[in-house]
Length: 101
Image (cartoon, rainbow, N blue to C red; front, side, top):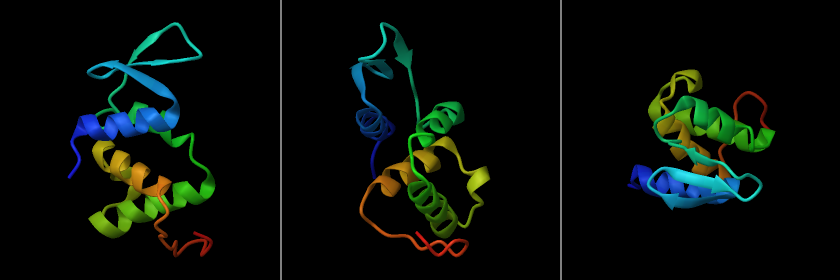
């Protein structure tokens, strides 16, 4: 199982953030430094989820609902972060709602 720091680093890489210390990241398009904890903050995860396309969002939701027997909207930040990374992979999760995933 991946640690929070490993998950946060992978999400940062995907979103184009560079790590400069524990939970400290910067974006090349900004002079600001951000404290981001995707595995602990639902607001940070919401922002990360906005980078996904519809197919990836569907995969993410289905992963949470199938593997944790939990509704997507009740998932913790950690559960969303894990599902986010899985949705970026090549694994296929079939959505019973749209059948397109």
